[in-house]
Image 1 (tube, rainbow, N blue to C red):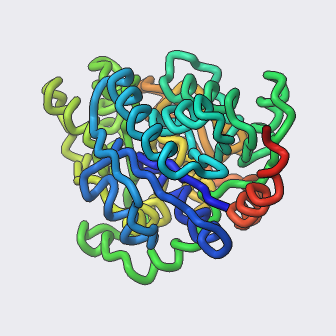
Image 2: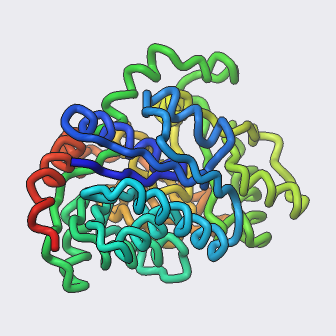
Length: 356
């Protein structure tokens, strides 16, 4: 069996690592990197640390508007698929790379499998929501990380090919958390002690590209008056610079870090403030409190169990959450058992003959 795996952004590299390991035990994988994330800190370091094979093709698309970026990806992915003629095209998550891979395959009548299917924020203003909904509706196999995701698909009439396999990011974290503890020197480099800082990440255009929202978030960070480590996504760096935003003195703005360093920073933080879906999950996996700088989340289970609170860009809500949020007594296993990648590969193999 031949599978073309399409990746392009930092979260997809993490998700693809455990699946790629399993695929290559039994089958041929062609790894296609769109180049959506392209500098070392956002791309290559993840391939190095997670031992992801060198991509067989790199489209080098880079940054652009949604339409231009997705269009260039479509052209490049189609050419690779015409050359490779795989049994499956495997896409991950909800980025423009996800949608481009799914559309290119669907138009060539190549079966699509979607890892992390069924997630919904129910906010169509988010580009990611549009990407994930469209991808789910052309996919033949839909690998859900939770039962909630499977229920979301059923509500849209999608019941065939749906499997709750667990979360591949949990697989990845189980594989790397011990490596991070053993090899990461990020706390020493930053001269911080475990449990004495907050960790912040910010990358969604809804927050970075709206000067008022970004200002309110940064003002909240200052009022909190605790040390905040802020590995800044390039979009956040650019927004802070172009909008002349004031970075509070208690906020330590640093360059993006690799996966091992990020896991170590997450694991040792007192709490995490983020607008990232992946970081919300990693916080839960690691048993760290999370404050989400959005009005909604796809990972509703983390909120329902008390480990995550939605605050948006509301300055007072952010400050209150940082002060009030307490570690819950219960920490249920919500995202599978760490064997999602194995299930995905088994299903790809067993169901390839059933897809028209």
